[in-house]
Image (spheres, rainbow, N blue to C red):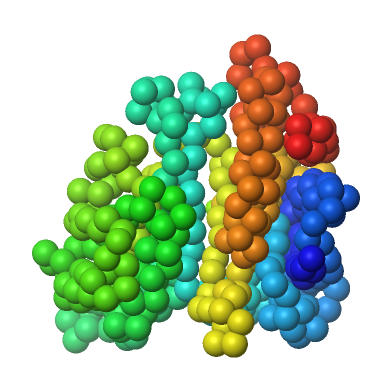
Length: 365
Ligand code: ATP
Ligand code: MG
């Protein structure tokens, strides 16, 4: 039986509150027998800044690098609005992403049957929805050089961002998408703008070549990213895995997120390259939402995005597919009973707090 090392980084705001609920889930799996999850805890964001003047300490960084997976809550809040830029709370997360080289961001959009009517879209459009957006996270126009605002001789200014992608960056994100598709419905749709962007032409070429060389068993299609945005809203169930660049992925994953409703329901994973010796990928799991300072300390936070992020951890870091499915079903069944935190409450549902929601999911397990 294996022991898996998890580093928990609760962070700020509601981060510690929702992390407490994940700990209940971890304790349940540990008590059940089988593989064991060993947890350590660190500080990140504003809470780390308050403790030692940095958004993450070197000691906690080292723990993150050594862990099998990092479970991350949320960082930031008005309390730290004025701290110096390079030690602001978000810098802690960026440092983790950079040092762990987390280049693949996974954002599922899943429709829980009990919440299908909460979407602004018709039930028939989103019922049974289960798509996974794989976004390139460390390259593209957010990082390319030159990146600056320059003064022009005519007194105007020019803002410059540069989209840059090299072959290896496209190859490795495509490989993640194809590998994940194999564990799902075996379909990948790649999105770019090859009609107007050279990086889009290269993206399309490299995804196609990677597919032919290593993943020809997976069904591959291509779509221009603008058309993809349209199709996501028109008939999202046509997609299984979508792979796209940093900029388009940022937008398309937010669109996909809103297909299903609340921010408090959305998990995410960020994966790095496989280790040369062990083949294991570095990984960080976090809810899509932020630290929600407006409701921190009130016991109202929805812990489901955080708990579903742990389900992703079971699935992608430890290949515990049955356990991940079990946890996802427990979340779904809890919602089926009409139990809701305030953010997802609807007529006829029972509003409960953060801790009660965690308990209800454990009871369902
Ligand atoms: P960030 O800059 O970190 O993304 P933000 O203000 O954009 O912060 P959130 O912190 O996610 O985003 O908060 C947005 C709104 O959603 C807030 O009103 C918050 O209370 C609510 N919210 C976010 N997460 C949850 C949750 N888990 N449970 C309940 N409400 C939430
Ligand atoms: Mg935000």
